[in-house]
Amino acid sequence: MKSDTCVQSTNDFSTLSKVSAASLGYFADEFQKYFVSRTCRRSPLIHRGYCVRAQAVTRCLLEFFQETADCHHRQVLSLGCGFDSLYFRLCGWTDVPDTTSVYEVDFPAVVRRKQLLIERTEALKSLLRNQTPPGGGNGKGSVVLDSQGYKLIGVNLGDVVALDSALEGAGLQWDCPTLILAEVVLCYMDPARSDDVIGWSSQRFSQSRFVLYEQFFPDDAFGRVMVAHFESLNSPLRSVRVYPRLQDQEQRFLQKGWQCCRVLDMNEFSALCVPHIERLRIDSLEPFDEFEELHLKCSHYFILVASRGDLARNPALQPVVGSSDFTVFPAPACGGAVLAKLLSPAVLGLRRFGHRSCLVSSEFIISTGGFGEGNGKHQRLGDVHLLLEEEETWSREVTTSQWDGRLLHSLTPLTMGGFLVLGGRFSPSRPAAEAQILTYEKVAGAVTITRRHLPLELRRWRHTATEVSLCGHFYVLVFGGRTTESAALQDATFLHTEDMSWAEVCQHLCASRGW
Image 1 (tube, rainbow, N blue to C red):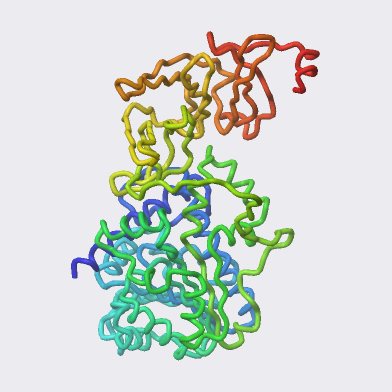
Image 2 (tube, one colour; image 1 turned 180 degrees about the horizontal axis):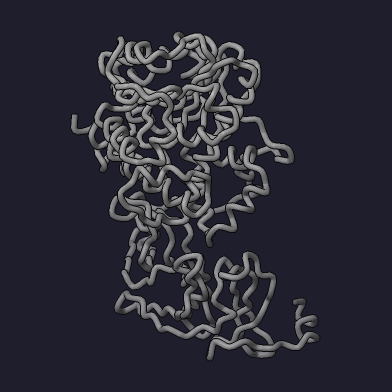
């Protein structure tokens, strides 16, 4: 089927992203690079996403191996394995290879490609033990790579009967402690068939743990774009509408026979289960400050652990020592009354965040930059947005494509006229080198931009900038922010807007004005 082929292609993107992240030290994986014919540098945001995914899966593996340390034998069954290097990474873990068998399952076409890559790569092939020709036994040819402790099996997960038969033929032991891993695979299946996999595994494995990593929460702006993105790839997220919330996923597993279940979104996992020293190490790898975007991404992915038998006695994903409770606070209650007018549903240009807005008059608001929906993607926006009130309704909007794409700048109305755009950055290593004065021409209904050079000290972002009046002169008070060299500035300085230079203000004058 065409959709199956498109789902398989997501494996190639994922593999390239893992190689990029591993090459910078986000996680240890010296084998993933052998499964790609080329490399590419992904963005820091993508690196962070794959890093937290690797942290979560590794944490689940470690907990499983610790809890089964006294067992004579244990198994890892990876469903929809793709080109993941799991077995080869485990070969470097102390005592794991001798006591653990790894079974990897995916579409026949995928595992045949993987088998050929392994056979042609000495660094991978040398880690196989007692390899035998595939295709024998009751597996009916499903086993395409057969070695001691590692089996690579080609079968469609949507056919549970065929999956059961293939694993039986490959020598899997149903009563052995088993970790079942499904990373972004069940979500592509018809929900009824993925439910069958969950129910089948709870019945077949008496001592087991199921680890699931995939998407959820499709109904907010980010979720809608996420769902549309995978639909555009002809790889729709089929189960996310049926199980949109974390509690839906939890009940799904409990109703299918699993004894206990714990599920965390990736923001919760990072706060509770990643040691502080590891977070500091990750922060040092490359410049990054797209925290809002990372938070959004992590609030739409989850890690779930369901257990049966003896493995259900110990709760999974336990917080690390020193972590604090992760609490999502409710929206604050407002006291008093606020007069508010809802925007017309037809106003689309303000579906954004990370932008800056200023009230020009009682009838006009200007907004610059930010992230939002554009061309069917969730992306950086390159426009100046004008919102105007007409006939007591905020319904008219005008956008211009003059914006240079900077983010995290300040937008300050000036008494002399216009709006000062100060600072901002294009990437965490590329600050904006120019200030801008935006002027609205009412007759033409357009914005004029005058560019001004910035001193090095003002090439910052995430700061505040407010116009103040001292001794008959107007200044812009610039406070805080960050630069490429400093993550948190604590200075407060005054700026002449005429020539974009620093101004010294006498201390006694500041004190008399309450500064």
